[in-house]
Image (spheres, rainbow, N blue to C red):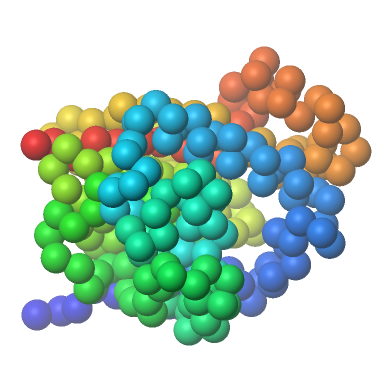
Length: 235
């Protein structure tokens, strides 16, 4: 049997190309409102689900050093129910230092070490778009579906446009989501929230005209490059 391709190479390429400072809120003012917009979209999506914060089991796929999981902690979800996986040993170690009490594991998203229907919510943030291999994307999507409980949710906070030279190798568009996650058969879309504006527009506005950021997002829907999409797995 041929094993699924590893997702380690695309991650390494992304980190090597852009480095850690690209999304540093203190060192790079261009990312501030981009970050606010993603967080606002995620919170709006979660609010619509009315999850029980005391017992909802959540998996962050490609969790990096844990910034996505930190958002769940701030929102009041129980740490003992939060799990994150990433292929980078260094980032998992950073996450363990930042988020004690959360189960962080070095693991491949295309071969997850969890049983079927383990989690109520499976989350990914700007991870799928960094991948180019369509077979790898399909493997990861299949695994995300497999470990989600029936009636549970998959939440994708990713870029719907790709651009040559950017970190987005595959646009996680409405059509791509439908293809990867078998929308209409295995899952259904239950929510979509506009998040960060397309770079470099969003980064430039964040730096020089932050007061216009959310106004532009509201009046020019196509300018929102990042979308948070929520899927429900069929019973």
